[in-house]
Length: 108
Image 1 (cartoon, rainbow, N blue to C red):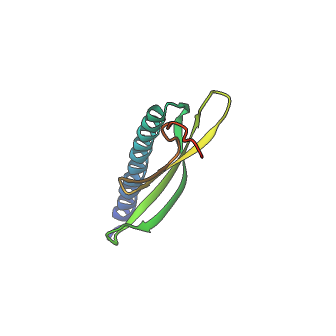
Image 2 (cartoon, rainbow, N blue to C red):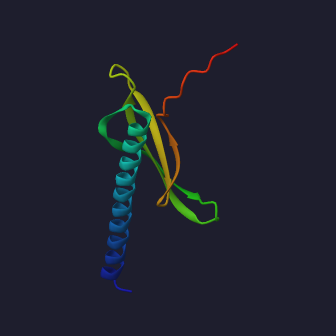
Protein backbone atom coordinates (compact mmCIF):
# COMPACT_ATOMS: atom_id res chain seq x y z
CA UNK A 1 0.00 0.00 0.00
CA UNK A 2 1.25 3.43 -0.72
CA UNK A 3 1.62 6.06 1.94
CA UNK A 4 -0.99 8.32 0.35
CA UNK A 5 -3.66 5.58 0.51
CA UNK A 6 -3.00 5.11 4.22
CA UNK A 7 -3.24 8.86 4.82
CA UNK A 8 -6.47 9.01 2.82
CA UNK A 9 -7.98 6.13 4.81
CA UNK A 10 -7.03 7.78 8.12
CA UNK A 11 -8.53 11.07 6.94
CA UNK A 12 -11.80 9.39 5.99
CA UNK A 13 -11.94 7.57 9.35
CA UNK A 14 -11.28 10.83 11.23
CA UNK A 15 -14.00 12.65 9.27
CA UNK A 16 -16.51 9.86 9.91
CA UNK A 17 -15.70 9.93 13.63
CA UNK A 18 -16.10 13.72 13.77
CA UNK A 19 -19.41 13.69 11.87
CA UNK A 20 -20.83 10.93 14.08
CA UNK A 21 -19.85 12.95 17.16
CA UNK A 22 -21.60 16.04 15.80
CA UNK A 23 -24.72 13.99 14.99
CA UNK A 24 -24.74 12.60 18.54
CA UNK A 25 -24.43 16.12 19.96
CA UNK A 26 -27.39 17.29 17.86
CA UNK A 27 -29.49 14.35 19.06
CA UNK A 28 -28.46 15.05 22.67
CA UNK A 29 -29.46 18.70 22.21
CA UNK A 30 -32.89 17.67 20.97
CA UNK A 31 -33.40 15.15 23.79
CA UNK A 32 -32.27 17.67 26.42
CA UNK A 33 -34.54 20.39 25.05
CA UNK A 34 -37.50 17.98 24.92
CA UNK A 35 -36.87 16.71 28.48
CA UNK A 36 -36.76 20.26 29.84
CA UNK A 37 -39.94 21.23 28.01
CA UNK A 38 -41.71 18.10 29.24
CA UNK A 39 -40.63 18.77 32.85
CA UNK A 40 -41.59 22.44 32.65
CA UNK A 41 -38.10 23.74 33.46
CA UNK A 42 -35.86 26.24 31.69
CA UNK A 43 -33.09 24.79 29.52
CA UNK A 44 -29.98 26.91 30.12
CA UNK A 45 -27.28 27.87 27.59
CA UNK A 46 -29.17 26.14 24.76
CA UNK A 47 -26.37 23.60 24.35
CA UNK A 48 -24.88 20.30 25.47
CA UNK A 49 -21.23 19.53 26.17
CA UNK A 50 -19.56 16.18 25.67
CA UNK A 51 -17.99 15.07 28.94
CA UNK A 52 -17.08 11.45 28.26
CA UNK A 53 -16.15 9.27 25.33
CA UNK A 54 -15.27 5.60 25.57
CA UNK A 55 -15.62 2.29 23.80
CA UNK A 56 -18.19 0.04 25.41
CA UNK A 57 -19.99 -3.18 24.55
CA UNK A 58 -23.67 -2.91 23.69
CA UNK A 59 -26.39 -5.26 24.93
CA UNK A 60 -25.73 -7.36 21.83
CA UNK A 61 -22.02 -7.61 22.63
CA UNK A 62 -20.80 -5.26 19.91
CA UNK A 63 -18.30 -2.51 20.55
CA UNK A 64 -19.72 0.97 20.17
CA UNK A 65 -18.75 4.49 21.13
CA UNK A 66 -20.45 5.64 24.30
CA UNK A 67 -20.78 9.42 24.50
CA UNK A 68 -22.06 11.36 27.49
CA UNK A 69 -23.31 14.92 27.20
CA UNK A 70 -23.96 17.38 30.00
CA UNK A 71 -26.58 20.14 29.94
CA UNK A 72 -27.93 22.55 32.52
CA UNK A 73 -31.46 23.53 33.46
CA UNK A 74 -33.19 25.73 36.03
CA UNK A 75 -36.39 25.12 37.93
CA UNK A 76 -37.03 28.73 38.90
CA UNK A 77 -34.47 30.91 37.17
CA UNK A 78 -32.29 31.32 40.27
CA UNK A 79 -30.72 27.87 40.35
CA UNK A 80 -28.69 25.62 38.03
CA UNK A 81 -28.92 21.85 37.84
CA UNK A 82 -26.92 19.49 35.66
CA UNK A 83 -28.41 16.83 33.43
CA UNK A 84 -26.64 13.98 31.66
CA UNK A 85 -27.53 12.19 28.43
CA UNK A 86 -25.77 8.99 27.41
CA UNK A 87 -25.65 7.57 23.90
CA UNK A 88 -24.24 4.25 22.83
CA UNK A 89 -23.72 4.43 19.12
CA UNK A 90 -26.83 6.22 17.83
CA UNK A 91 -29.12 4.98 20.61
CA UNK A 92 -29.86 7.00 23.75
CA UNK A 93 -29.36 4.72 26.74
CA UNK A 94 -29.82 7.11 29.68
CA UNK A 95 -31.13 10.53 30.59
CA UNK A 96 -30.53 11.91 34.07
CA UNK A 97 -32.11 15.28 34.55
CA UNK A 98 -35.37 17.13 34.89
CA UNK A 99 -38.39 15.07 35.76
CA UNK A 100 -42.00 16.16 35.24
CA UNK A 101 -43.53 17.69 38.34
CA UNK A 102 -45.81 15.34 40.23
CA UNK A 103 -48.35 16.28 42.88
CA UNK A 104 -46.84 16.12 46.35
CA UNK A 105 -47.76 12.95 48.16
CA UNK A 106 -49.07 13.30 51.67
CA UNK A 107 -47.31 11.32 54.35
CA UNK A 108 -49.46 9.92 57.16
